[in-house]
Image 1 (spheres, rainbow, N blue to C red):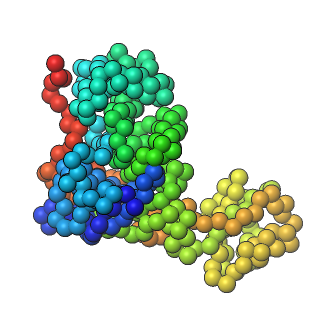
Image 2 (cartoon, rainbow, N blue to C red):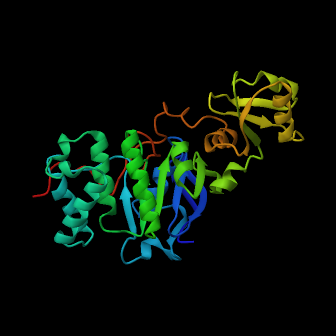
Image 3 (spheres, one colour):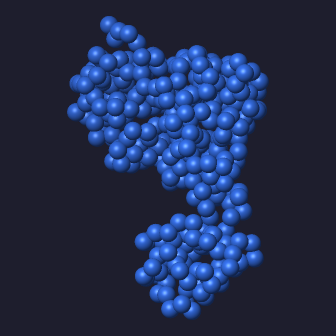
Length: 336
C-alpha cells in the first residue's frame, strides 16, 4: 500500500475527533472517504498533510512517515476554498504552481490545458471574485494538481457543482488514476463514491465503521437483494405471497427487494410469473453504499447536516464553516 493511516487518534479537549482510525490506499487508486458532517474527514486530511499533529498513530507514504519526507507528495483541495479574490485566474494558478517549484512557462501551459479540460478557458483573465462558487471550486481543483503530486487529497470536491461539472471532475479523477496518481476524496454523496471508487472507508464520529473494496463494503451487512422490473404496478403487490421479502425501493425502472435468510431469489421470480406479471428485468444485487451506511451507522448520511461542527477553535471537527488552520488560507490581500 502507498498511503497508510495507522491507528490515528486526535482529541480537541473532551471531544475525540478521531479514534484509532486505520485504513490504507493503494497507489493509483481512487479512494472514497465517506461520512456525514463531523465524522472526522477533514481532521484526517489535515493530519495527513501535517497541518495538525495526531495525538497517537501515524501517517505514512510508501512506508515513510509523511513528516519525514523531504518534499510533500500531496496536492490538496480544502473544503473551505482559498483563492485571492482580486487576482486573475491564470496568474494565481501560475503563482500557486510556483510555490511548488513549477517554472512559470510550464505552469502557464499546464494551467491552460486544465482550464480547457474543465471548459473554462474564458476564465483565465477574470478575477476570482467575479466567478461563481462552482467556478472558483474548479479553479482551486486545478491549483491542487498543477505540480503533478503523486497523491491528491480532495475535501468534498463535488459539493456545489452542477451535473456537467461533476462529470468533468469525475473524468479528471479517472484520468489522474490512469496516470498513476492516488486520489483520496471525502464526500457524503454516496452515489458519487459508488460510481468512482475502487475502495472506500465509512467513518462515523471519528471511528472506522467499515472499509475495503466497494464490493466487500456493499456485502458487509450480509443483506441480499434482487432488482426486478415489471410492467404494471411497480410496487409489486404479488410479493406478499413470498414471506420474508420486502420492497425497500420501488421505482418505475427497477425495484429493489430484500430477502430474509432462507428465501431464495427464484421464489420472487416464480411469484411474479404466477401472478401474470411481465418481467422485464431480474438480477441479484448488493445493497447500495447509501443502504450500507444506514445499516452500519444507524441513520442517513444527511441527517447530521443541520448540526454545527463538534468542538470549537483551531482544528474543530470538520463541518460547514469550521474553524482551524488550512494550507490554503484566504489572504487579506493578493500578492503583488
